Length: 320
Image (cartoon, rainbow, N blue to C red; front, side, top):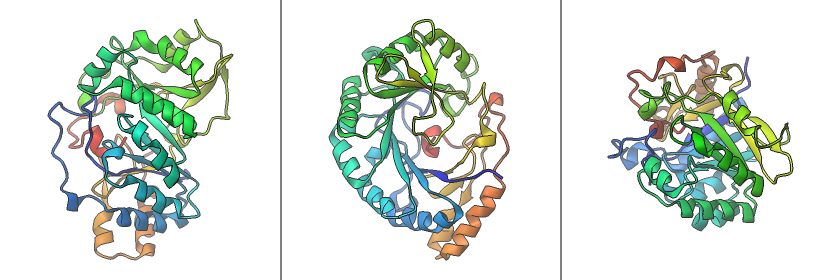
């Protein structure tokens, strides 16, 4: 049986960008405030799940930094002694101004989603936003010690494949880990994902024409990345191949949507309403038993190469 010790919590379905592979330009139907989990409900659920083995948390969205008072939630979760790691994935737009507050609240480290280092291309893929703001946010996170700072790059053939070397040069100069992630046929990217798929093995081969890489296990991570130091550089690179290198057998995570549904697999459209149990005043033991049953039914693998199909959720509504 797999060890499930990691939960990704979507704190909001709202976002201040509209990335083309994640969300339509006009956005999605947003949850009403009362339909989202409160911080107290998230906290009480995690308290109930600690005895089931949960000890690592990642906060996601939408964009988690647009959730008002996110520092309060981090402080609440950090107060649970058994929780070892609290991380957050952001698009970086608000990071520079919020980084110090996040660290003071108890955030361990941060991931920034960034698919281009070119200002014009950045606007194309995000539809709006400022690359300069994101880069300043990354620098701030490095300066105050939210490390390792990880840069998540979705690899898209014909769009940003000419920037892979640029990203590694960025990691060579700065204390960051650039992680190349295969484009997945999920949500808005479904129709073209297979055509635009760039295999991780090919990316690594390309990088090694310019840089020497050394495999390492020293980089702190909760996920499936294969990690390499850049010989002579400050940073490192990682590779995540959800399509070409399925890692389902070692998947250690659950996902919690902003409206309180537990999703045992990102790809498979099966969700379980834990928020209803919480609001019906289920006991901690009942909550834990409910989630342990979900864990027992966690799928052994996905068929992501078949496409997203008719699933109702967009990526921004799941939390990645």
